[in-house]
Amino acid sequence: MHITHRQVASASALLGIPAKDVIKDLGLSGNPYYVYLREGKKMSKKNVQRIVDYFIDKGVEFIENGVREAPKGIEFIEGEDCYIKTLKKVTQTLETIENKELLIMFASDEISPPAVNDQYRLMRKLGINMRQLIKEGDTYIMGELEEYRTIPEEQFINIVSLIHDDYVAQVNGDETAVTIYHDARLAAQKRADFEDRWNRGKIPETSTAEEKF
Image (cartoon, rainbow, N blue to C red; front, side, top):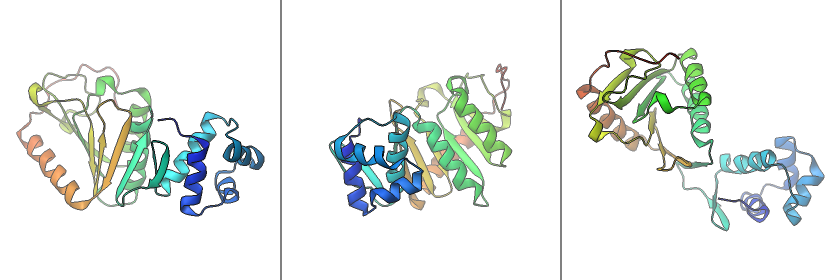
């Protein structure tokens, strides 16, 4: 979804955050931002995305032709890099709690891009335990075999869900957005589903992946 300067201005008004505070918080140059807000004059895509992320982090949801306060306990991350952004948020959360475990449902190491693999490596270095459900017959396994369980091919659809602490992060079907739920009951339900599949799954016997975490 293309986000306009009017939506950014509306987000600022919705939260009551003046432009000067956005400029200060993000370290932006003042005049280009003011002109962008007033007239829609171009800013770099990088800075526009920084501004959008700034308001999303403060509880704004950008919708078609407008903005609104995001529902409490729900966050939306959009864009081609939505999954890596989600992993970074997961990492920040898990670093601060005792139960450092991430459950990954319906993923494949073989199609994970380098940035995702690098984030997985960082998470492991930080002491975050990871368990993953993969498709039966998948031998491209980059972690230790004990971290994986295979499930029947007919039950596997490569749409990833992440479960950690009281959070569930659900990737959408075309992998352009992630919805993050901060909901203890939902997380418990998803964790129970994961554990049931994990207990019925099989430990893979071999890995053909040359690259490892």
